[in-house]
Structure formats: structure tokens, C-alpha cells
Image 1 (cartoon, rainbow, N blue to C red):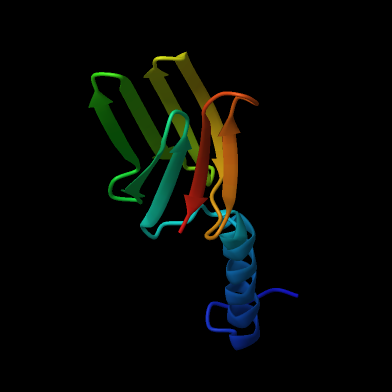
Image 2: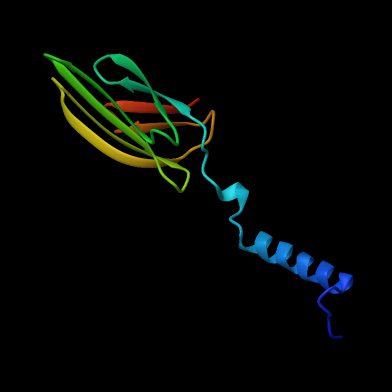
Length: 128
């Protein structure tokens, strides 16, 4: 069937084809990482328990928290990735020794993960 320049059926078919092609080429919304700002709570247990809150989001994908005392030092860094993960790097130093770790966690509101050594410092990460 040949289509004329003003044939309505052909124009509708062409428009429907363009819509289907565009929807097949668009990225899936479910796979998109969260774009809203997220509050991340870190609770570190070692010689004492200390909590840190940081914000990460599309406008500021990375946040840091540092605490330094004469007998203890803590450094944290959290970055959102385009893949919907939170990359967490942290280290602590105290009288018992030093510990550092890097992890990548899926970003889900309400999710919590505990990182660290079995009998050393433990870091609980909660996405709020």
C-alpha cells in the first residue's frame, strides 16, 4: 500500500511507529538511580559510639565527615554513583590500632548495612 503525503492512515501509522521506537530507546525508569537528596547516618562503634549524618544527592553526590581527638581519629566519605550505589570509604585510628575499609552499597531508603571487622570497629550505615 503506497502512502500519499496527506493520507491520514499512513500518518497515524508513522506516528505510532515513532512513539514505539522512542519508548524502546528510552532508559528504564526502574533502573535510574535515586535523584533526591538522601540523609546517610553513620554510627561507628569502636572505643566509643559516635554518629555522623551527611547529605548526598544529585547536586552534591559526595559528603565527608571527620573527627579528630588526641586519642582517636575517624574519617568518612560517601558518594552516590550513577549506578544507584553508595560508595563508602572510612578509616579509624585509636589506641587499639587502625582500620580502613571501602564498600559499595545499593541505595534504598531505610536500608541499613553494618561494615567492619568481627572484633574491631563496626560502622552501621543507614539510608534515610
